[in-house]
Image (tube, rainbow, N blue to C red; front, side, top):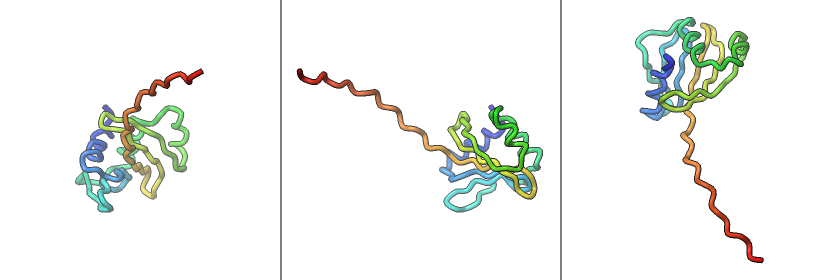
Length: 116
C-alpha cells in the first residue's frame, strides 16, 4: 500500500471534495468548503515528492520534473482519485479529487429476432 493511501481513506469516509498535500502546509481535507487539517505539522517538499513518486505512472516522470501542471488517475484500496500535480512557491502540490464510483455495468439485454 502506498503511503498516500492513508490520506485517501478519509476522503471517502467524510465525503470530502478534495485532499491537498502541499509542501510547507498541513495535509488538508476540503469538506463542504471548509479546510480540515489531517496532520499536526506541515509536510516538507521531500515528503510530498516521496508520496508522488510512489504512485506516479512511469510515463509521467518527465512531467513531474518540469514545473508544469498535469494530472493522472490513481486507484487506492480506498477508492479512485484524480491526482492534480503542480508546483507552488514551496515545492510540489498535490490535489486529490475523488472519482465517483462507477455503477455496476448492466449486462446487455437479449434482443428478440425481428419477425420475417
